[in-house]
Length: 243
Image (cartoon, rainbow, N blue to C red):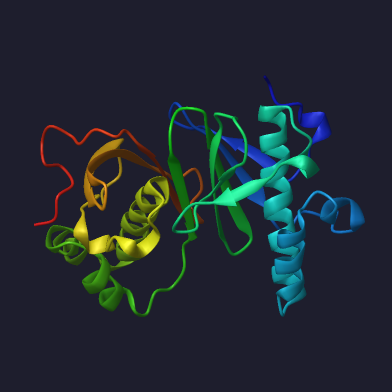
C-alpha cells in the first residue's frame, strides 16, 4: 500500500532509509492544524497527556508528532487514524493493538520528530538536535565504553558534540528496538562513533545475547539520528561487547 500524500499533513518529509525502514521527518512547528480536527485523531490518553504540558509550544509539538505518527500508520494499515489503538510492553515500548505486522518508533528533539516504520521485526529510532553539551564528558563516562571514550577524546573539539550524539542516538535506537529502555546500561555495549554503517551490535539482555543492526542517518547538519532493528541473532564476531 502506498502512502497518499494528498490526504496527509504537509509537515511530513520522507527520508532516504536503509531497508526495511521507512523514515519520516516531522517539522513540529509547521503544523497549523491544532484544533479539534487534529485532537480528534488522538485517543483519550494522548489528549490527556497533551493537556498536561505547561507550555503551549510543547503541547502543539506533542499533538503534531502523534498526529503525524497516526497518519503514517493509517496509510500503512488501512485503519483510520482515529481508530488505531496502542498498547505498551513491559518497559513502556508502544505497539499497535491487533494483527498488523507494522512496527514503529517515534523520537523527537526540539522542533523535529522522526518516525521509523517497518514490517520486518522490532525497530527503534532516535533523533537529537546538535547543541552545546556542557556535561558531555560526564555523560560519556556514564554512557560510553572505554573504546568509545577514547574515540571521543581523540576527536577535534569542534567534532566532539556530533560524535557524542552519534553514539548516543545509536545506543538509544538499539534499546528502543529491544524495548528494554534503560534496563540495560548504555555503557554495557559498544556502537562506535564514526560515520558509516550499518553496524552489528551485540547486547546481553534479560532474554539472552541478542544481535542488532544500527545505522546513523544524518541528512541535515542540524541533527543526528539513528535507526536500529533487532535481528535476534548475535553477530559471529563480538562486535558490540563491552570491553
